[in-house]
Image (cartoon, rainbow, N blue to C red; front, side, top):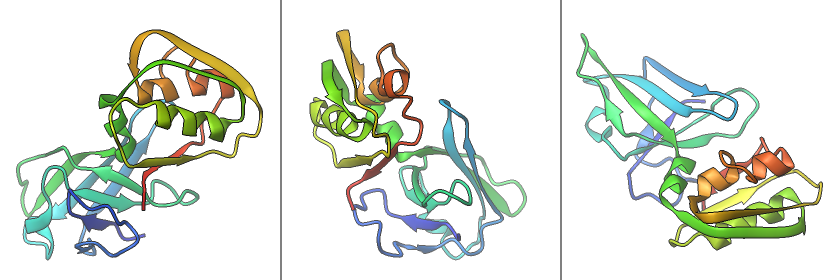
Length: 176
């Protein structure tokens, strides 16, 4: 898939956005199990969309051959080396949930998808994320002891959805 560039404020990712990054030198997604999920795009400084590549812009790209395209928000870049600039930190869009707390989250006897929906509904700050999971096993969890980020409640703290359901295949996107 050729990566697609979107404006920082875009909400509709079913379109071709600003355009296809057809002249990208490389687009590499690093996805570590329960770890980082980031994109690095090397792009010509004189490429046809170079003037639109900037911090906070969003790139839609495939992380691997099996998964659907994912959204990554740019947060940094290198100085031009030769004719190219590398745009780093295309963090997966779900990283934005790091700044959205949830307080004392509890669910009882629900499947993985229901737990995800209830977690997103429990977020303190408004957001436009949706989620999906194919985990049908029912379980319960409670995360007490003060506010944690929604993303940590998904995976990264005791009692998280990953901890309890083993939910590794979570799809979290901005509502399209």
